[in-house]
View 1 (cartoon, rainbow, N blue to C red):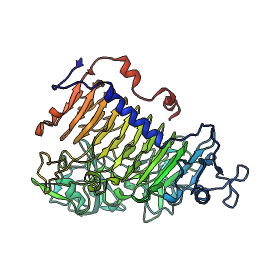
View 2 (view 1 turned 180 degrees about the vertical axis):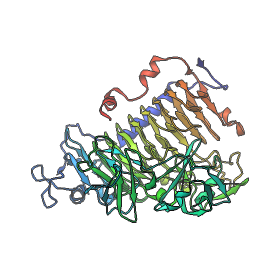
View 3 (view 1 turned 60 degrees about the vertical axis):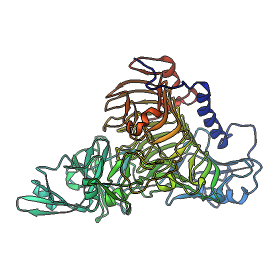
View 4 (view 1 turned 90 degrees about the vertical axis):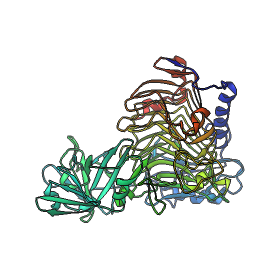
Length: 617
């Protein structure tokens, strides 16, 4: 079925089409890397895992660490006459503490500092630590000591193992406001009850609440849950938790090949290997750092003109869910801190807290990630936040990530009503990336999230095999838009948010919404003047609604020339009729339930990046 205009509109033609691509090209040019250029670099340093930091950093005598190369770059980058290259030989670089870049590490004179893989080689920045000395325990389980205080992920021969888990809580009933009674009385004798997590599927979220204690109560066990998070989960707006869907992180649940458990007090890891896994020979790694790399500038002195090419970022964690759980509002944003308010008997917040990424770009300009790999990560993959402008993420692969793959912007006051325009996350481009099998632990995450941003271009990405939405743009359900939205809030802003001129086009989004629902291939919230959703090929998303979704508060968005097929509900879904915001949106010339070879051929990775589809695991 060909879908024409749903409103009285003037069709926007080539001028609008050119605007998005011109913005993408300008953004890419601002941070462009001239790896294959005729210009000789000003300086070249070499780094290799088998090198020595006392070496001079030449090809014959390389440094051993990127930190040592960073020290040398700072000596020569104040008045650059050409790019500075740091060539990284293949192998693993153990990052024992966060690798931090600031303005002192920036390129100058219009040139860039480039951290680049040696030709044909694969350097890995790893925040993990090996776990060795495995010994058989009992019933096919092995154990080993570790000095890492806590971690949520374990990788055996490069593959993520499963934290020990079971099914639903047997014979469970809610009791009072603090927890449950269960017929599984033996749980009162389980080891380390305060490390156990109850997990709840609630439509578009997977909420995690921690146990506080378990005691016997007659023929039952009384499970007390950690507060205040359990109360927040029971009373938050949207979907509330009831009985847990499954239980995770107890030694007593370690009964399936591929599962593992960390006994924190005993500093011992237990693992039930899969068939063929020999723990005495296996390479077992756990994350030992949370923030693997951060580029952190300030508004007055942003970090800028640094490039990363062909580097793998891996093996970093995120421990806050182990401390307090994860009460997901949406897209792995949580109610947290002192900003929780009450409305009609439920809890909400005008600003939510995001799940942080393991690689962060903060107050930074002209930063570029080109053909990098982000994998085996315990938070989100990559954040562009607070004053991040004119940055490019292109040709990268994101997979095996606990949370969202890419997060652009945030949803705090500094984002929706910044006091300084330099705070705005603006003119960033996410181009030709292959995102798959992300959000594997925190299922409510998305492939690419953009909050209150201006001029974000999300184009020509391949996004597949996700539990929830592919791309999510905007936030706030209209609450912080000029004049407010339909919901009652304590403070009404009279000025608009920075959300405008965002562009989501020519992405190939399929097999998303495989576990949760009430999401889409492309999902939008809030007023975003000048924003366009165009030319995306969206198909085979099993849950509702699954196609393109303009949710509450969505306004001033154009939706055109998209191809939507085989989704679990309404291909074009609109929940933005309040305040007649649907009438501000221009929806026309979309193709629903039919084929269109031109759109299908244009969407997804461009030809020079399609090798990512065959190279990725």
